[in-house]
Length: 148
Image (cartoon, rainbow, N blue to C red; front, side, top):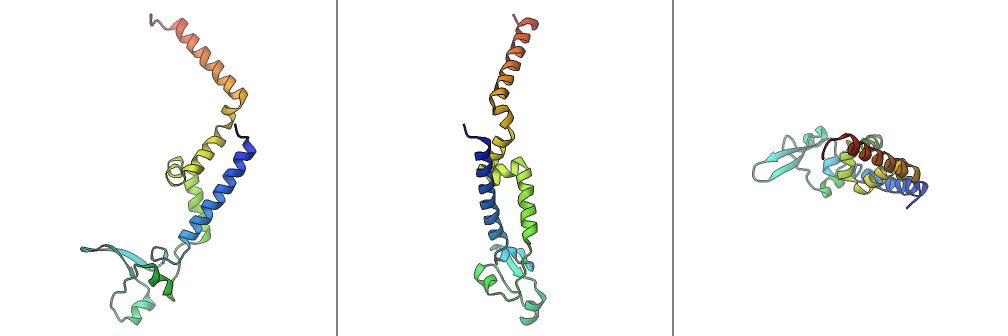
């Protein structure tokens, strides 16, 4: 069985890696991260991103500007990210607090969190206490329940 400090160190490492990849994903220059990009449904095409930046709309004189690809957003000079480092970290911490979301998004982190939370019951004394209460419960049921 692994020791608690070893598991805690692995949790810290994995948490740092997942947070770093999340920051890279949500702070990158992509259409979905642009403050001015708005996804609208286009008939026959599905969802498509349109730039709503006043500077861009003024330059194209009222026409629509489709910003649906990473190449377009990478070349954009007026790109503004809708996320900040603090908001990405706060969202990540919120995910870690919710067992369902962390299990869905980061299953390895969920297992480590579960292991660290149940550490007391996994110790030798905790297992002995659980076995003792289980034995007493079954003995009580045998003596006082009229199932025979």
